[in-house]
Length: 336
Image 1: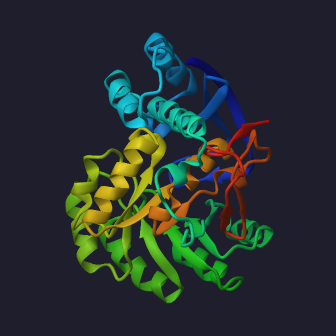
Image 2 (image 1 turned 180 degrees about the horizontal axis):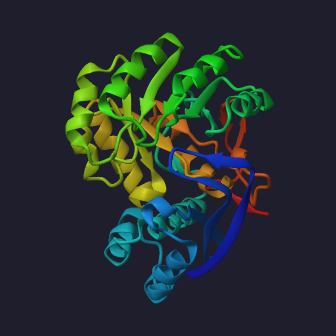
């Protein structure tokens, strides 16, 4: 098996702002694995909050190139378990590698990934489209630019309720709110009361990740369901979220890819938690991988490629929130 690493700097259509940062470009690593005439593709983006850069991921993968390239036709689960000890401090790199390996493995089997997992796609959820923090006028114009059935609205400002009230005047779409750790306990409980009246479906990670007492308090008193994101990073975190959150948002880059993400979703379902997968402004490479988990999800946020000025791959397509699969096997990706 041959390992190929490519670095990209993905340009966004608009400056993307959340409660803790703003970006115009998203650095991204694409991993390609070649074997027996097939190629598999995976992706992970850089992230300052988790102190991850593309050069760091490339360096970590180069260190174990010989181990990766000596692999031959192991299952993705066996491959993940073999590689994890070397990349447990860089789950983003492990994600890119795992996505590529799952893609390659399914292509060799002549199946789409969801077919290999025996999933049926009739009830796939629709994806939301994210409106990043900006002036209220700018947020309204972003929403009008792309009419959509479900919007995820980034908050964590001094005028959060005013923003949602104004957006609501312009659409009947479902709203989801992501405060990215920007609120406190009372603020969350009070905001939930107002936001429920404005047609908000749920709140995502309103408070700091490690404040478990605060999460429990909000879990008891919020009139809206609360979904964990920054509080649910790796497999062990799913059980911690029970009785603290109503659901979990699994990010493949944070947990180490599809192999571990799939296990997290299964664990969440056993605990009666709602299941969601989110993206990190990946190109269609990463987004196409997420698509194969859709049959297991209640909610999904896989709009990353829609936020780009220019994509680097083809694969799944998304129209009006509905995800359509590529005709190709594996995750269905082709690099442009």
